[in-house]
Amino acid sequence: MKVIDLFQKQKKQLAVLVDPDKQSDDEHQKIARLGQDAGVDFFFVGGSLLTSDSLYHCIRILKENSNIPVVLFPGNTYQVSRNADAMLFLSLISGRNPDMLIGMHVIAAPYIKLSGIETVPTGYMLIDSGKPTSVSYMSNSFPIPNDKKDIAACTAMAGEMLGLRLIFMDAGSGAKIPVPLDMIRFVKDSIGVPLLVGGGLRTPEDVRQTLRAGADIVVVGNRFEENPELITQFAEVLKKENR
Image (tube, rainbow, N blue to C red; front, side):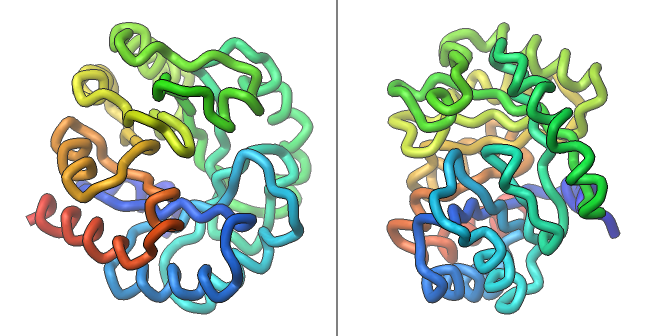
């Protein structure tokens, strides 16, 4: 089964975002085993800026210690590895930086094709989180204001009409506030493709509310870097919501 088909499952899902730079091999191993035991659906691997040659090792450790699909969540064209199961082919549709809409994709396309890795066309929407984030700085783009749900919905609709298979609304790493619930509801009611939501989700209750607002897949990273054992608690929320 292709990874894109896993995103289409008629259930709520949890993706654990792993930044190869921020943790040791032992910590990656621990996250893999906790994720396996908790029933996590995906590992997303990547970061806005990787400063070490750790991508391959991170993917290898995750795959050796779990059978959870490992999906690249690349911050730039260098974050490509054929050892992953798939990659989110991200277009930053919330911004107006042509390099992040299509420019870098043109450069990366031949290498990705040669790698043979499955690509999942994804519309990436950065939502204002109350402070500048790594993504907004590195992408040189402005996020969608968090009180402009109409702009978010129209952006998501345009992405779907362009053929993108997923829409990902992200408040960004270290967000002060998560994506507003009313925005999630409005966007979800406007599209027919799976909706991913991440950034600023710090408690199981945050995850529960985000799922009930309409997110199909929640993405959590920083919180698990601080306390990997929380994976079990967050995954339990998904199990309850899927009953």
